[in-house]
Length: 488
Image: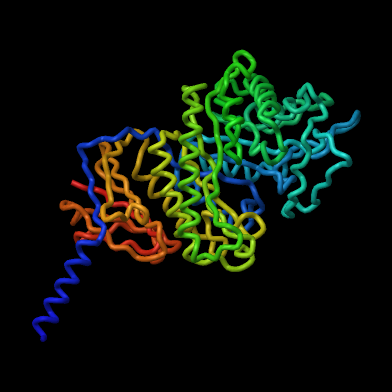
């Protein structure tokens, strides 16, 4: 009986081993060359103000990351931190004031010095829109105001009022100052270079614009800003919803004024579960949303290639959301690994789709301001798993890397995603576990003895360390992201 029992154990052990998913990588079969750069966006908010508890660790993390194409967006929920002229000028005075805006903006510009940046002061002063009554804003700059972004029609249909505002704002940071509406000169002393400027943010939501209205604004602003920053490149759209009519209209050069460049477009995706779903359901719901978005990207890419093939693409807000109910409670620790895994998924799939810039959203969030997208833990002020995954990818997978044929067998592709990359620096495999369970993955011969970096529940908010692979398999904890590097 003992011998029979032992044989049964061996038999089931062999079955289990045979059913364990296995990674295969053909380093000689190059599928494509990457043109993608991973990066992030920084949204202006009170926690990035000087002396705020998240300020120093957040900007230190940003500087240490050293990313290119970082997007900076002072945003309408905090009008005093985003709008430099909060009141309409009169015959006797103007309201220009950068005293609350400058510290955060200068800290961003200094933290990203030496790297390309994308600036987007996305909030148009509310008084420029026709409204039934003036829209107020909080006296306290730290107080959130979701109503400030309203209004659908500019009071000045020529858009000179709008473009003059942005010319002065850009001149403040690049030309040392500007002359206001009454002829008074305002000196800043700043002479920063702005290589990229994005025109507005989510105009389809924030001001319910049509693609026709937005295109007219884009053309007017680009024409005006090129007089101030002639070497800058401009990014258009930044839409929240990937409606085909937006891309069909904006990317058609015949819908623009002569000489207006279509250098880059941008759009966003937040993969979220349904409001009534519990966290146990997120592993499927969130990845399903992410997969649907990738299908949308392929559709948009077909439009872009048909109408404006030289235009680049920046998907510059990628994140995940929890429900409003979950935001009222401590967000489950496992969520941060789930969200990090989703960004790794986006990076692999958007790289395959040929997207130029893949931006994670956002450096800092906190209760009342989308805590679920923060890359800094707002409780202990340490970079969290979402940050460390971005850094892992940014440090190890470069634009120009070759993607090679990579596969997971045993029908485990729905649970694990892997992609092999190679460049002059070596061979790497990026892995991610989509599921809220541990999964063992068998590795090809030659992987044993290489290094692996794991971001999972064990690494938490700490920077992950490279360790030697001592077995011919790797155990991926729930929602783990791993990089195997230095493969022979």
